[in-house]
Length: 566
Image (cartoon, rainbow, N blue to C red; front, side):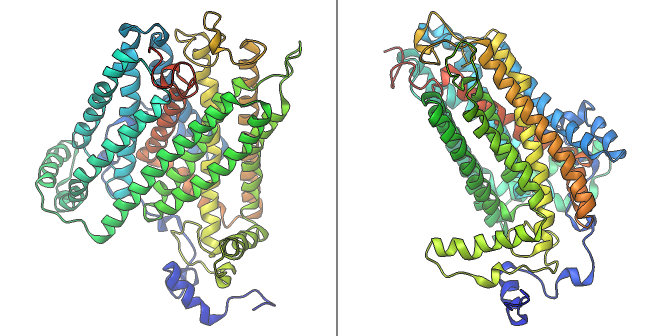
């Protein structure tokens, strides 16, 4: 109805079939409750199943999270989650990339390549594979969001061995080649894909066999005993995955591929940032914002069949953390104006600052009716016109009935969109603070540690080809301004989150309980917080490895294209 903007009754069924809604709307019968959200129904011992993703629980760090949770301090709770996601990945990165000397590949001696060949590069790829497998298990099976380590240990070992064997003859002959870290990731991803298909039947059969044995789980000892029986039965099972399981598996392949492409896109940003002048750096700051939005959309769309938490962690936390880390770690090379006082180039920093600042402002608009109407118009009217398709006008009209308690915010149903956006906004704040905060914790080791000449944080007089600026070398002030920038960003995000919490509580009290439930689930479930730690860990590792001179990504032109030792 053009006068009332209400949905015609005869079109409701059309939208219900399109978006798989149930009629009458669930919101007509009752209001949303936190119990409507899915949570894995497992014994506590299995929810805290020990591996890297629950190490924070085993060492007791999450008790601090629960302390804030019990006192209903939302700001303190987010800050504690961010600190966990900063310090655990940060300590790992400081040890692996900052404290272990990696040698000097410009000397073209095998002993200089040994640490990179046998530790740094293969360990980075094994870490990535471990995280990818862990996320896959949780996406494919929300009831048992993990699999026994030995089930995918052969895959991790094969990646380590293949990485060493592939680069060994290269190290012995040509040394390094341009963008070899990206080639390394392509190889790891291809090996992982092969293992995904080899393990597919066992992954799903594990769930099927587990259901038969779940009544036997009583205490820790019996759990271990019966889990071994479940594993054995799953491996030898003739289980045939269902259609729904096949759909989730195909969706994961798309998600894994998209995440890899996202890494290549941000690596291209690093290369352009390193080679460009201030005008190009400013333009890249705006371009990479659009790229991050595109990858978030793709990942959320491909992962719509997964559990809501995993869908949002992969499309929200992973994208915004990667965006923050790549931006933060490249800022030391924002070129100054060359004057005697080394005034920073404000245009580049300002353009970079617009991204987190925009995230803060947009989070406030997400709940407004005006924003939702504009969003529907863009997605359902303007976008089809631009691609020469027929506008889906009925999908552009807001549906105020609560159609889906587990909605992802991708339809024109307003209540589930508002719930989804509060969850997403929380992950945006979390991911950005973790990304920029990680830079503050880690970057100093590359400025003062044993690998000072291996990352773009120092001027190296004996290697003039590594100079960063046309008229001068790298100075402490360059790094200092980058640290100040990250401090300002983290402070802005923290203040923005305080305002956001007040805004929701005061003006949208019906949405606030949904926000609290989404946030607090990470404190109550160690494995959920564990997935967030894994995502930040692999993102930070990928960012740092692209800056390492052995990787030849930032230093892509430091040596011949097909070998620096030729």
